Figure 1: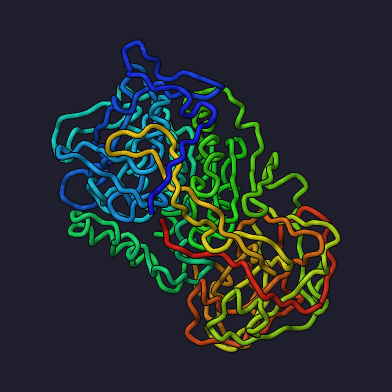
Figure 2: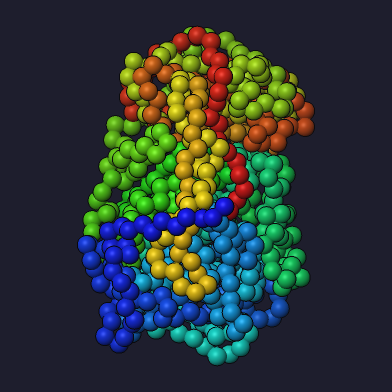
Length: 616
């Protein structure tokens, strides 16, 4: 089917005809309060630099060089940099259309994936796309969140600020400077690319002015594990990293792969290897402003990843958040016009020092229904209180419970089977129908007193909104045949992308927060303890970060179960679990009246439970 192109105009977007750059052309100029397209993409400078990373992880006796492909305006003025670092440029590609880098016969970069170059280079920005060490045209090794990955970003930022040496080739001695750079850098990227933005920011490096992590990881342990229990996607970072290694890394990086395998034991313990990939631990060093984007239904990079980083960075760091109903989706594909406009103003503010006041506007924009957004001045919103609710025979309320509740883990349950009432391997507690709306905004946790009939036991907990709703379904988008254009196209690099629309449906219940744990880690996520059958253990574990409004008439539910087969591996011996209600509670950040309890039965015919997808 033939694609139809639609050219979209924003304030300052495609409203001025680009003119060839001359010595008199300024680095940027404003029109309507935003940077305007005054530089020609046809004249843009395209080049590659190979920056000394300071590491020799591939052990060839030469320090690993990281390749960075650059496109910048042809101007004598200095320009700031929008930078994305990725392992995907010659493998799965970037964006909804899986774009990869291309080069001409001389090795000069031609295609720069995504719209950033087409849109921002005419407005006075350089775009720098960095190959992770061990991928594409870089040397070194892939170490999945480790020192190699962080050096892939910090080395290039240092070079852009004159603090590190760059070379014209991968192995030669001729050097290349960044005399065209102001030194101001903004890092952006989705998924793994957004993760490195978090990691580089946690070093506190000078020159990094802002980061825009889209579904970014802040703690790699939490992508592979959840409080001691493993996710089934990959057993260790080795399996993930090996998919993206170039030929040099495949032949030389066995020691790095072994280190990752040994540092990620199957028992789910948090080790020194995981600690080295924990950006939350060093979040106090962050100086760069943050514009975070995450999907409420993203079960690939779960919402806890942004929530724990958001909470850990210093209060002085300017922050902004978009929280969609999608799964693992870029905002360019669920809120395109608003995204380009907002990102434009965000980069103008932090990279060009344009005093547009965006940092004083609403801190959070949350999607309440498909394509229906609501803004708040701060996040969590004012009036949010950490509230303890307790399960009991009367339902879910503030009063402590008594007695016990038991269920048998069959190892095959899913959110849909548990919530539909067709699976009894869980217990559910509910409030009465709400008399006014209740907002859950932040990161919850559950404390459960439980005994197991076997020496192995895994736990699941959900917060559930029971009541009819219209929601995005699946990944949250459908790709259309029409296109819209965002910036200036040039030979070999099209600025036009296929449009999308929301996929939506009606449900009776929504899982709004979830968490999983291995009871053997009841004492510490770093230490596995022996579970004695019949002995009660008390364990606290985290639920995912959320921003969700439960309307009046709906009910808030708490589900406690064994193995959620859609998310975690099953224990070696499936147990019967007995929950001590007097020793069980859930701590939830709530805004609104605390609901009363209700023991009415809960059954949902249709459930919104999130989508896992693949990293990337």
